[in-house]
Length: 182
Ligand SMILES: Cc1cc2nc3c(=O)[nH]c(=O)nc-3n(C[C@H](O)[C@H](O)[C@H](O)COP(=O)(O)O)c2cc1C
Image 1 (tube, rainbow, N blue to C red):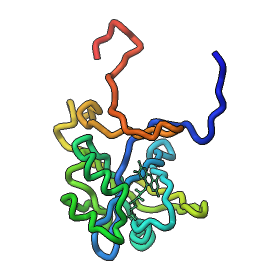
Image 2 (cartoon, rainbow, N blue to C red):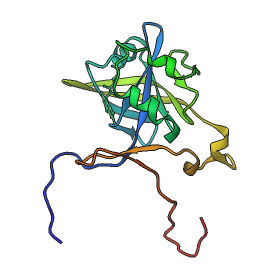
Image 3 (cartoon, rainbow, N blue to C red):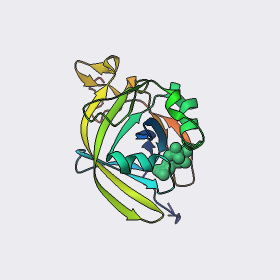
Image 4 (spheres, protein in one colour):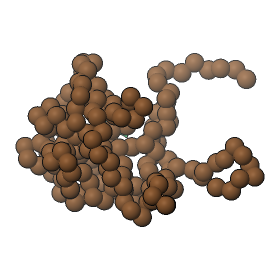
């Protein structure tokens, strides 16, 4: 088979996340596609354009949240990824709760939430690499089976890059040992 050269980063697909921060004492949320676990999961890294309204709150409080929306939040996710908190109160779309850090707003309607404290900010003008330590993680109890997460119950929104800029859903669980049941 021939290899075709393509432009850009093809480390994809990735889950869509909603990053939250308090800006001027109001929760604000934006869609982040370029996020990653870092330091074997103890930290989270994401790319943030400097012009984002959410950035003001991240710099001010040195905290943020990472929320994983389910498919049923596609409409709200679309708003968080297209409207800026400068023009629209995105906090009003969700019920917000706070955890140990007190200043990282989390979305009750998202089945997975993490609160993070900023440890590093890398300047990659015109954007920044934000690195935060995961301080506490939360999951909806109905997404757990025997105390462990079952991702089939989360229905995350999967985002793809490399020219195919679309949303997908998570597929079935597969097992290399064919005779083992899932
Ligand atoms: C699928 C998708 C992925 C996105 N990924 C990023 C990202 O990684 N970094 C970023 O700065 N903006 C990203 N955005 C854009 C912001 O979510 C969007 O501009 C948002 O309205 C900014 O809100 P704010 O000004 O209230 O912070 C993405 C948008 C979409 C739809």
